[in-house]
Length: 395
Image (cartoon, rainbow, N blue to C red; front, side, top):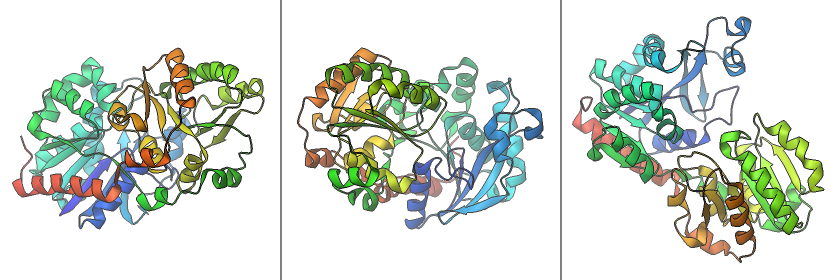
């Protein structure tokens, strides 16, 4: 089976760490015997570097036509957009952007769009025009946030129910899809996985701390992700003020980068060496950071099924995280962590202090852990092969 994956969430030569979960799952799909090619959508505004376009669009204008990313043939789709206009014209512009890639669309037996809007909707319409079966994989904010906009929701209601299959990473997202009219029979839960070899070989806690230079004694809280407001960074800083006042032996480490990094850096002095910002780190280093910590903390406002929690459990690390998206599913077992309400710094502080007061078992956390990427890909391959065998667009 030949699969064309159309996705905005995938690494490129200039952003090698972007969207690692799709890269890992698509690579595992290839190991399942699926011939995968990737059409990686990057924002495109002609003359971006001259017109003062958003930084990412201007930077990615330097990409060539394609690359091989982790063994996957990847071509770049220059996704046209109009600054300040947004949702109402996103799908027509996407379809126009797909036109130069008609050869790939015709080559595919099955088309997989990832991210519901506009990517998934455009993939469904393009597949319908060619008589191809199409699946759409949703991730989190595309159905939990973007789909709440009236103009977007109206288009999703008209287009997504005609996809042959909708793939979700949590039950909560399946409910959101059903609410916009997708038949339950077409909604498939395929949980994300982890690189079992990489995370299963994480070093012991003391060894990991020495390797990373984390020499402060006491428990370590670890945040991994974008340092941005929607990840709950404001609530995390406020909560840590209380944690630090009651437990001055606790250290908070943030691994990642984003628009709030400078603000976090400015707050460091008042914590007397107990707040560290490591910046963006190579993916291969993440198991060491997880092994070095005592608790993973993820106070996001919205999520799909965050891989950092799955990876943390694989390393034997429980988490304190917010009750959004698929997080309650990941932390359903009490041995895996504590779930708190989102956007509530006090609730987050209470959860962290409760977790710090409790003794956790590394073995129990691992027992709550996820599939490997090969298991995840095998389930996704089964959905796609069923769609291929049925033929047509599913409309």
